Structure formats: C-alpha cells, structure tokens
Amino acid sequence: MSTAAPPPTPRQRLDALPSAPLGAWPTPLQRLERFTAATGPAEGTEVWIKRDDVQGVALAGNKVRKFELVLGQALADGYDTLVTTGAAQSNSARAGAASAAAVGMGCVLLLSGHPPPQPTANLLLDRLLGAEIRFAGDASWSELNRGVDELVAELARAGRKALAAPVGCSSPLGALGFARAFLELDAQLTAAGVDPSAIVHTTTSGGTHAGLLVGRALTGRSVRLIGVDAAAMFPRAGDALAGLAHDAATLIGLDLDLRPDDIEVISTQLGARYGAHTRAANDAISVLARTEAIIADPIYSGKGLAGLIELVSSGSLAGPVVFWHTGGYHALFEPGHGTPVADGSR
Ligand SMILES: Cc1ncc(COP(=O)(O)O)c(C=O)c1O
Image (cartoon, rainbow, N blue to C red; front, top):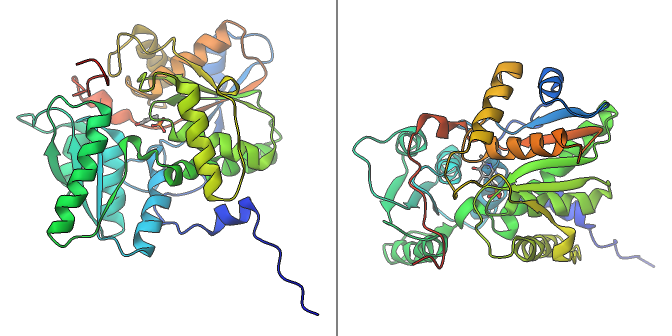
C-alpha cells in the first residue's frame, strides 16, 4: 500500500518559490558597540544592525528582497517587462530598474513629479540602468498604483508582456521576501547566541513589516517587530499590515490572523510629512556615521534609526535590539524628494 507524501509545509513552500538571484545573502549582522554607547541606553542594552544596505545588486536596499520573488515568478511566467512606481527619488523604483536589468527584463517606471533639468541620485541610477521613465505629475500613491495598471494595458497593446509591481513592491509575494529575510536573521541570531527583544525598522508601504510578521510566525521566535512610520501611507497601519501579512502568509498555506492591535508601528518620527527632513533623523544619521561608518538616509532609514534611538534612550527597549537597515542612502545626494501627495488631500 502506498502512502501519499505529506503536503509541503509553509516553510517548504516559501523555500520552493521561484527566485531571481539578485542579492548577496546573508547580509551582515553586526554589533554596534560605539553607537550603543553614544545613544546612552539602559545598562545591558546592545544595538545590533542587519545590513540590507550591503548587497549584490546596484546599491542595494530592502526592495531587492521583494523583487527577487516577484521577478522570479515573472520569469517563470514568461513576462518580459517590469512596470513599477514610486516617488521621483524612489528607492523601490530604482531597485526595480536594477533588478529588471540584472535578469534581462525591460523596465518602465511611473514616477510622481516632473522631469528635473538634471537627473540626480536614484533618478540618475534609473536612467543608467536603462529604465524607461514616465512622470505622473502631482499624483497620490493610489493614483500611481492605478497608473501602473494602465501602463501594463498600454504595453500589452504594443505586444509586451508586462508585470505590475505596486508602490514599494509591497504585493503579498513581494512581502514574502521579508519572510525569507526573517529566517536569514533568525539563523544568524542563533549562531551568534543573541536573543533580541525587538527588531526596529522603517515602514512605509508595509511589505517589509508584513513579511517579517510572516517570518516570525514561521519560526515561533518571540521578538517584537516595531515599524517606524516614514510615510503615513495608510489611514490605519495596523489594518493594512495585518491584511498584507495575512495575504502573504496565505500564498504559502499559512493561516495568519493578526489583530491590528498585535502590530506595532510608531509615528513619532514622520516629521511634517513623507520626505520631510527631521532634526532627529539627521542627528541619528550623523551618530551612526561617526561611530560606525555606516550611512543611512534622511527619508527612510534615518527616521527608523531615530525611532530606535527614541525607544532605547527612553528605556522602552533594553537588552539586545536589532535595527534593520533597509538601505536608501541615495537620498543623501538629492535635496528635494519629488514626493507623492497624500491620498485624499486633493
Ligand atoms: C530605504 C527604505 N527603507 C524602508 C522602506 C519601507 O519599506 P516598506 O515599503 O516595505 O514598508 C523603503 C520603501 O521604499 C525604503 O526605500
């Protein structure tokens, strides 16, 4: 009598997803002794950093993990072009352009704002990487996402098979890139004998946070995941993240029903709006640079780092704590950010 093989576990299904080989994994996990001392935390606090600012493809960042899965599936399904979107200086759009170039696919970017006289920072890289760029003017995040769908239809009429990736590549499949990332960190923590009380990272479109929630559920590790909001993209971040984590988990057969209250997002570092510089982020960037020679940026990772300093120096977090550096230092080289307007503000 033959017995049927057991169905694959969620973790096996995650491992079996098609993946484009883009990054150099694992990214380093480092202890930040001098930075910890400089932030004046409670006795026993130790800040560690997970360096997604260091990777294999075109200046890195958290989006590469998402594009590995999205483009892995796209290649398996015979797509020839990636269409994605974001602010004029979007890290995600630049990572999309880089990822598409790295696997030989075309890339069309829909960016908010208007063409500048001279492309700089991420926009300069988008051009170098061969992306075709369309400007959407003063568009909101949801208008950008709708514009991507229209572009896909336009390209289909021209005979191209184009795949849409939303703002931040935060589709359920993209988010699973951060479920894999959690497993990567989990193994590093185990090897280093470190059991952090929290992982702190910047959050905007939610794929990073949602994926980490899925990864945490897969390992059963008990660690707080704290997103530092840098965009106020959602009216209720808890609902949006719980929904995205649920949809991502469902793709690998995991039933993950989080309550919005289970999700920790702090909004104290946003400043005036997405893209606005803050004193706290600028100070955080300079402390990290001077103590550890690691570079963060004023729009994303600097705000996340400022959130970590706020939590550690107020005594809200103690023991080992991991800051997930999601990359994005390119914004340091661009004074204006070409930001989308808030949904519903017009
Ligand atoms: C450098 C950097 N960090 C963090 C984030 C936020 O990640 P997510 O969109 O997955 O919330 C982004 C998004 O663009 C980013 O570019």
